Image (cartoon, rainbow, N blue to C red; front, side, top):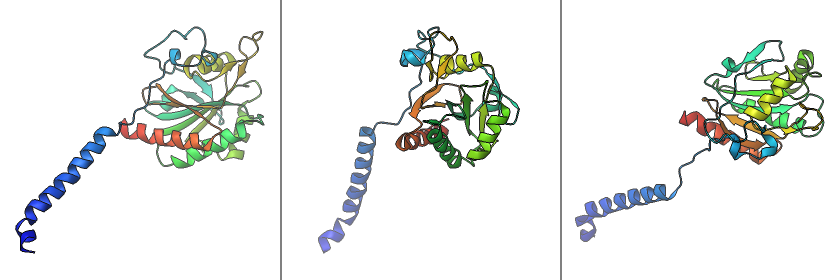
Length: 221
């Protein structure tokens, strides 16, 4: 007992030192989380317009101008300094779109009180998805206007954004230059307009990964 009292300071110091050493050792072995910055040359060529497939650095989302579910013009200005998730859909889609929309609603709910995080969904059938159709779809699915824009516009411009900026949509019929086949991809864009991730919008585990990556981006930027 006397021996323990005699060396109690040494024992306590050794114990604290050991804990610090273990923590530092674990931190050194644990890789720091990072997110890649995607460029066209990194992506499956099927999803990228041939005019930009060679780009291997400094790729950013181009300026855009579309009309949302309220008939308002939405440009890059509304997303300036924001982290956002973009996707492509159409309101009459009965295959993957309902699940994708449900998962977008979950993301909307998760970041409802975070004004730095927004959503942007582009119709690949803008001739059918006019403002009225988008508004009805928005009401049906609980879209919050201040958080999530469903947009329509010139089909050529949507096609250009899909394949030259977001790198997320397949070309449709070769005979129809601006035909598009949308995919299940959700695209994560950072505050510098860079593509930081692709996620399967139909899978719950992918949505959880996306939510974690958004939180990481928010804390890093």
